[in-house]
Image (spheres, rainbow, N blue to C red):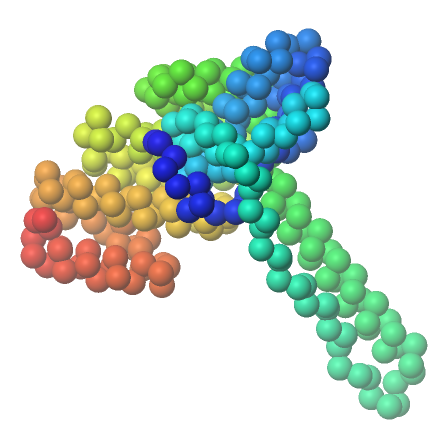
Length: 292
């Protein structure tokens, strides 16, 4: 994928790669290489980590690469590994909406002691703080790295993907997913995220493989798994849209099989009001015999 218009890429997220003079590299503070690595190799491995993040999102992402001499290079990293160096800093992300402060409960009756009203307000603040902490914990859980004992399998996946060996990367993802399923269960965030990676890798090969049915099934299963695990919705919605797009291509080649596999795709579409037009178009296509 060639970057033609960086201005069309969303301002967030912006990942930060830091490479020190001793070869230690991090991505957003998460260690990628140990001290003692070749700095050039450390930089390549850090970019490979960001490339996987781009694959998760299905689009190029922004990066600030910080060198040991203090210089910072604004980059765009695409899903296929293309790295574009910008001649200007990334745009400033829009400000986050102001957080609405927790509201204290209604005033206690005049017969209640004043201390009781203060206690209610304190409980409300504690509840708000606990809710915020829980949200941070969930976000951290879904962005956590693969456990250390599975690092070699993840490194193998990244190496294959970086070299453009997508079938081998997909096989490594499947092996890692199986191992994580056995250790943590199919709904563990790390398992679901690796399954999502396998789905993106498979999707990137579908034009060449023409495995429209198999890819549709995997995208549907991954979206369903993410919904069951209550994973962040953005990637789930993208999977659903891609499942629909691949199903449409399947309908051109095998209308009968497309009709047989339409129901789970349609069920996923109707769960999101943003897909109303897609749902109606799919129903009309089915009514016409699933022939494009």
